[in-house]
Length: 230
Image 1 (cartoon, rainbow, N blue to C red):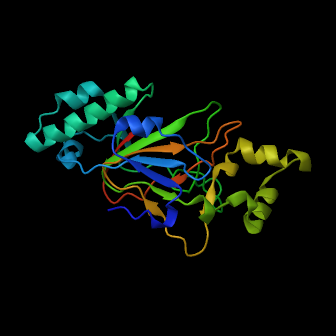
Image 2: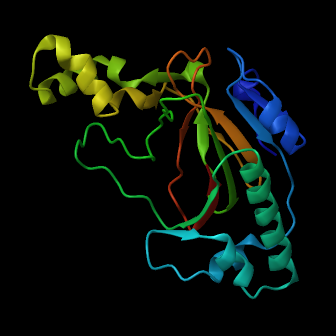
């Protein structure tokens, strides 16, 4: 079971795909999950994929060609159905096996990789969909327990040292380098795991949005991760 007690107003659970895509966000709710208890052996799918890169994309043809056991076949059919549902909705789902993401070491005091709590940004209204079938799932933070890193005095001071320009251009510098998208958990705040097998719809940051974007991060991998995202 997922513990939603830290963010009861932020998270809403649904029982089917139609409700997942049609339930509106609100000022309180910016993460909606189709909560499921899936059957099937998703680990077998990961084990059958040749991993030559840190992130391996699996297309539908490759997935269908895998020779799988009965439980592996069940897992594959679930993934294919999820991809079809999302595609019919107008999304472009991508299935990945992730060994690890590239780390950002350009700014040691302020990493901007996906392991940092962040929000997704888009120039047009859109949402992020994701589902972890195997491996460690993503985390989110209640918005009330997250603080934008550029507002933390010590970090802001380091960013001003990094910035080389006129004062009026500093805010643009923060945006152009995506510093404004990253957040830090307040003291004693525990991240909320999104769990395995559930499809999540997370709000994004985009111009004129009235909904707070969902603060989330990729997990530190303990093994390969099978992730559907769009």
